[in-house]
Length: 154
Length: 435
Ligand SMILES: Cc1cc2nc3c(=O)[nH]c(=O)nc-3n(C[C@H](O)[C@H](O)[C@H](O)COP(=O)(O)O)c2cc1C
Ligand code: SF4
Ligand code: FES
Image 1 (cartoon, rainbow over the protein chains, first blue to last red):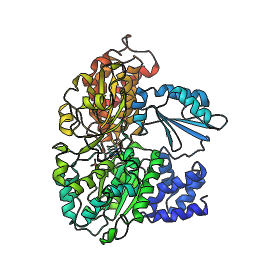
Image 2: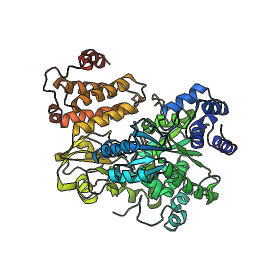
Image 3: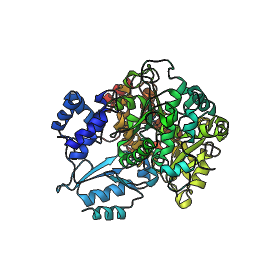
């Protein structure tokens, strides 16, 4: 469950909104940063904390694509395949990632190191094709650069 | 043109540098004015929203009730998820204080004491940059209690999204701030009467708000003379796709599209011709490459050309582009992002994608072209929010302007491929058309 330190953060967050239920999205972010994903137990814990039914929390977690309701690999690779990236060869980047990681979009590699997702426009169209790992954006990629990037991640 | 939103000054994101160049002077000035005077200034400047609809900003502000017992809210829209759009991110990174100053001035004009800046979750890194700037602004008393001793107080909070294009739609955004799923709301009531927590709310785009300090600093007359009179000001244009120098370019509105492509973005690789252009993000109507001469980046000119400014995110496609693949990818996007509340959007976006995939593999039927048009027409105007229209427009314009591309992909076998899924199509068709 949330650490003492994170519980303090939650108390701060509540003050930002006239109704504490509104703190749900940021609190879910805190939980995901702490655990890497959001378990059903965590959803119940947060629901109790913010006075929200479990169903509401679950509904929110599943509505937003960035909340993980199952654990992800050590590195979560998100490849944009929307138009601007597609026009500049994102399919080749996706291929390189699939090949190197041994996982297709929606999958996690057998060794648990990589999760691969195909995502919609990431707001980096000027640096297309691109991928993101966590908060880091890697832009102007080539299959070669992608290989080298993945190689460098231990 | 001189750059105002993204000036070429090193370390401009730092508070001291921003202050050295006159930063927060507009806020001081606004605090000394009557709130109506601030709104009036913005109204006269003719600033129009940069979030997609070009709505007059000053006019929007006047919709906020003056007499109310409820708290009022400002939501600054930095969801930036429209494919082809990557401009607000530049503001978070290179000029965060302009956005914060604009937000504080907007609050001052409308008597708002709480503002939320909603930023897409994928921008975690940029949220931290903006948060740093915001913390600095709090310390200096530009935000918070009794701003600069004026007696006026307002808080600004960042609210991080979590991956949902629909949350950029203003009513879905409000639900998302309330901690709900991002479902758009039926209007009326409009946000100015009944917004977040049922209170009067104004929603403006990040770039729109970043124009406000310029107007207050130098006056509406100065501002209204930049670019096109009916849609003036500096504008951030994103150019992506088949150009030599993709990027965000700050220009005055009214810049020629061809200048943006050739002068700013360095032209087309291999000097090939432009086949097609999406002028303002994937929701705007696609234009033919041979119809760009004289078209300008402003609301009037793009409307006359049969499209719109949208988010000014231009996607350039050279003559070798497979447009069917492009439109199929766009259709997939809207299908994926539809929230599912309205039948025409939920079902229609799925059908558009499904039928377009048949063209992509060369399995289309001539009658499918009209069917696509029918489905798109059925979605347009029949939904709770404008995502439905946004899904329909690219398909309609693609068929209208590039019908031959579809015809080339019609199956040579008269009845299409013999797969069972295809044999079921008739039943499916009737279902769709009766939407
Ligand atoms: C599906 C959909 C997505 C939208 N996404 C955004 C967005 O990411 N950012 C934005 O500023 N406006 C977006 N809008 C437009 C907003 O609803 C709203 O009109 C805008 O934020 C108002 O700001 P403005 O008047 O300053 O342009 C979207 C609209 C729709 C229908
Ligand atoms: S038009 Fe689409 S996205 Fe908008 S409310 Fe209806 S179903 Fe949801
Ligand atoms: S299309 Fe890939 S980042 Fe925008």
